[in-house]
Amino acid sequence: MLKGLAITPPVVGRISIGHVVERNGKRLPEKDDQFTLTTQVQNRDGWILHPLDEALRKEAGGKLRSIPVRMLFNDPALNLRADYSLFDRTTGRPVCVGNGETCRRTSKDRVDALPCVGPDTCGFAKGECKAYARLNVLVGDGEADALGSFVLRTTSFNTIRTLAARLQYFHAVSGGRLGCLPLELKLRGKSTAMSHRTAIFYVDLVIRTGLTLEQAIVDARQLDQQRRDGGYDQEALDEAARLGFANGAFEDLAEDVHAVVEEFYPANSNGQSVDVGETARSDLKDRLEARVAASGVG
Image (cartoon, rainbow, N blue to C red; front, side, top):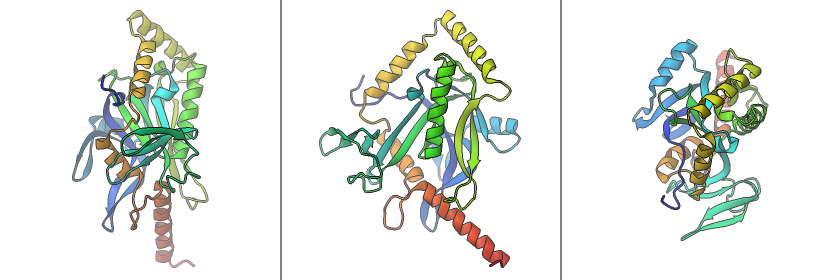
């Protein structure tokens, strides 16, 4: 195994709740009110849709606001990895990644382990660092590829906090059988003063539609026993993933980070990183003001 290269779950597609658009000569992220499943291939129009996107959208009757999923691993921390991350916008390389206690920071010829004070008070990051997470899931029950995952990347605190809590709770109530539970990603909306009372969307993880929690746990116990009888070793899979993540200082490859930076770290006219949530809020504010002006109110 190549040292310094993180071995991450095989990815066959992406899950997003937005896309990048060109506006006033700049490429900026634009949030949506539904999920989109894409391949890992882009063309001039953006990411190419995955065949599952159309299939799930037909089942949903239009807008895709829930996706049936299973977790790859029993360990919640292997399914969802969240860090405070600072990227170099020029090279696409991760510069500093931390958890609020310790961080790994690149210098000219090495990676240093240093204390991490978090993005709000870090003098090194100068406001350019933010929470960034990746969730790997099997869409459906992994019928097409039992180990081929879709990745959801996010810098939303609402999404990160909700997913982290749900994964821990489902792991606990299922007796550690998180990878066997029939689950569902669900898009939820909420309004805040910062969003000018307009809905903003985040991702939740719930028991699959049509099942109670108790029924899902029974299903998980049955699937766990079926897998054991068939020789499926979930504990060994979790340990292999744990070792793979630990094999590299940083998870994201430089070739992937350019797309991450473009989607989650858009630059303003001064070349500085702009918070995606703030970009969305400004866009909402502009649209609301335009609507008021057009109606002649005020």
